[in-house]
Amino acid sequence: MSNSVPKTLAEKVWADHLVRKGQDNEPDLLFIDLHLLHEVTSPQAFEGLRLAGRGLRRVDLTIATEDHNTPTLDIDKPIADPTSRTQIETLRKNCQEFGVRLHSLGDAEQGIVHIVGPQLGLTQPGMTVVCGDSHTSTHGAFGALAFGIGTSEVEHVMATQTLPLKPFKTMAINVEGTLRPGVSSKDIILAVIAKIGTGGGQGYVLEYRGSAIRNLSMDARMTICNMSIEAGARAGMIAPDDVTFDYLKGRPHAPQGEEWDAAVQYWRSLHTEQDAVFDAEVELNADELEPFVTWGTNPGQGVPLNDRVPGPEDFADENAKAACERALNYMGLQAGTAMKEIRVDTVFLGSCTNSRIEDLRAAAQVIQGRQKDPAVRMLVVPGSARVRLEAEAEGLDQVFKNFGAEWRFAGCSMCLGMNPDQLQPGERCASTSNRNFEGRQGKGGRTHLVSPVVAAATAVRGTLSSPSDLAPVDLAPVTGAVNAA
Image 1: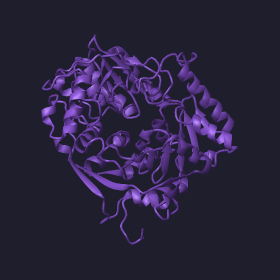
Image 2: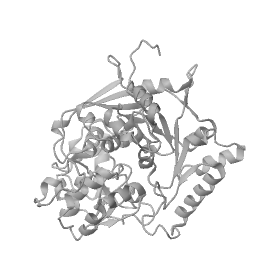
Image 3: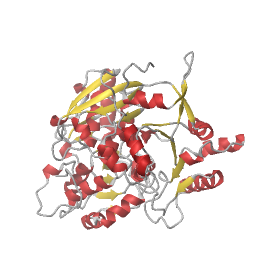
Image 4: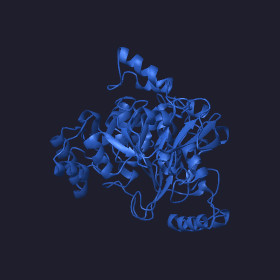
């Protein structure tokens, strides 16, 4: 691409990492700045290196953590589930053999890989970031080009620190306006997916833009980029700004002194240039957004919380009609039911989408001084050991415990139904995670995707609810909580 052609953010980062331009329809070859590993997708890649007699090309650009298979109770005891135990032990052996830095259970920096990278300052603007996990798109909140890769690609990056890729198309998601109280970044991304569909972003890198995006915190931006993959996109990105720099400054792996000044100067250049052309654009009015919740079995089957469960007749497309019918049957719902009348058995506050400190603060503010519906079980799973420690220092753990919620150790947990953290067949869950597929949280489990404050209000009332549905309580706000009620 000629230097005279205005570039989008994604095109700039791509160009800065181009090792070799593909010829005759071959893919480009990109340099990878940061490779994140966990126990699920790395064993075969390590074995491939072992069989080939290779080591890692840049072990210094590789970091591993335990997350998917980690128990969230009794972490000082042997892992009961044999499959989970084997995967964790295999990662430990591989990292020791190949010299890879690993944060294991009990380590203050252990946690979900997409929480750990940012909190350590490893994720930085303008980087290319990969991981054998689809929600690597989370790191795009920093202006990084970040995406999930398959096992063979994991091995390729390990061996060469490069990756062959064909250029993506670009899509602008323009979100202008101001979010109302009780409406969050989770509602923005659920509304986007409902609008464009779970395949609407296929082949694209999404760039989130507009005043509503610029006014979001880094935690909130990560939530949005995290779920880009649920729209079918390969990645999601947000241009770095002072919010980004303030978040990164002083973190363990962030540049310091003159290197920090030089880095910020470069980072400020990472924005879509005027007159750059996107392949597609989508508009969303933040002023009109309400809390969103899913009713079906994919993240695109969502409606405003004040709405009703749709029926097949509400869709023009025959495939959508059939998908609606299947989803209603699996979810045990009847068309026309008010979303706020749907009773849940479990509330899950966690996952790489919504388990950061701001998420915990916002939920704690909603439940503080209130009683949990006794029929509802609530699991609170911080995204990392560091988040857990921070929450405990602020007293958030006690707020959750007083409410009757289970306060757990860090991990992916019920997001994908690992170890004992699973729904039973027919159980219904309001979950702050990113996927509501059939059986995702346990065989036969039924999942409604919600924001942290909707999860908290739901735990109070027992039915899908927003903070505005709760009677007021006269209490001082929980430290740091924002935009909760």
